[in-house]
Length: 331
Image (cartoon, rainbow, N blue to C red):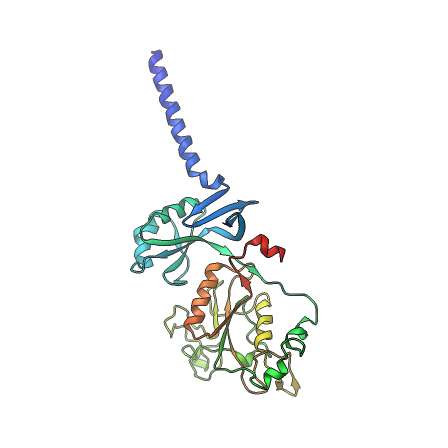
């Protein structure tokens, strides 16, 4: 009788130990202070996860957002049905670059265990966590926009304007917090997507086609974006990339505010480096809005892909990735 009790006790102890081991293994990545995924190493600091570049803290990452690149012959729908359903993940973006996609890890799953499982699949050739960038600083001085960039002692723009005031054949993609594209000093230099310009007048008319506007609720250029007249909002996934923080509007003003523009009996606003002259158009801007708190790597990548595919010759991003965080803050 005692031996049976001992046997039962030993089995119970064994099962308890197995359960504890499974529990510890399943929670190992949560408790860990560092984690390796492919060629990347990540480190936890004050409850947040960062890229660890040879001992130097880099960009902050979002473990719940996993970026994968599939094999060239692999379609995301096929991959989703064959693998992701088993892992419980969700595809939350379209194609952000060459077969790259972003996957969302639900709250009931450990993102590190999910990422490890994905990294072991032959269909996945690159994998990392989505990252947050850092906006460059802008001063708060009230007359800062009037100062150094255009004056004679710095860029000497009056002499440059004798040569060129900017050409509407050049498209500048501004990847930022959006642009107040109807601003009176910018609205003459808006890039308008010719495939979505339903009425063909070269302007962005954000009202229905049946009353003379451009909105027909169709993806006329088959780029996955419906009615993307002036660009795209990659944060809210819609066709209104209006500025939410006015950082992008400031950037647009420096680059291509309409210069020497006399409208309705008065000269308006400030001068842009390549904003045209009087009634002549300058460089056209494409507004591409990303997260305004901290820019997301995946959104920036998708915006770059969009810009390149729609004729942008220049891209402005007033933020950065890959600069070690400690070095950045010491600048």
